[in-house]
Amino acid sequence: MTGEITVDSMRPRDWNEVKSIYLEGIATGNATFETSAPSFEQWDEAHLLFARLVARQGDKIVGWAALSPVSQRCVYGGVAEVSVYLTIACRGLGLGRRLLNA
Image 1 (tube, rainbow, N blue to C red):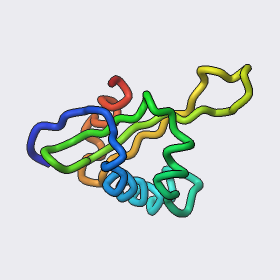
Image 2: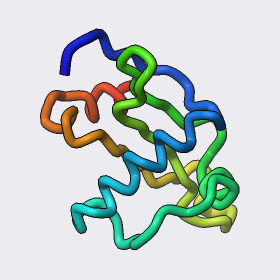
Image 3: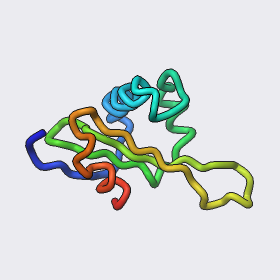
Image 4: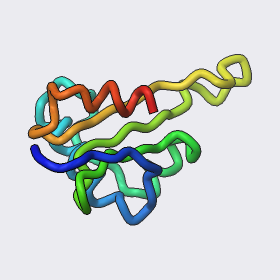
């Protein structure tokens, strides 16, 4: 991959590219137990609004990270599960760590 990669906030209009990268992860059989991607509405409801990032290379999204609460119980307030997904071409280049650090 060539070109500068920037990390910024995910926007609803990014969903199609985010979903595509999610589907790549599902296809590996290693990223999740899910077998299909949810609708944006389902995904949106399950992930914290303030903790959604994308990695952009020019106009293309090449990775994303988001937090989802582990439970609705108050004793788990502030505890979240992190998801990090990258396009195949960007795996192994340190981009996942960059998203986690952001």
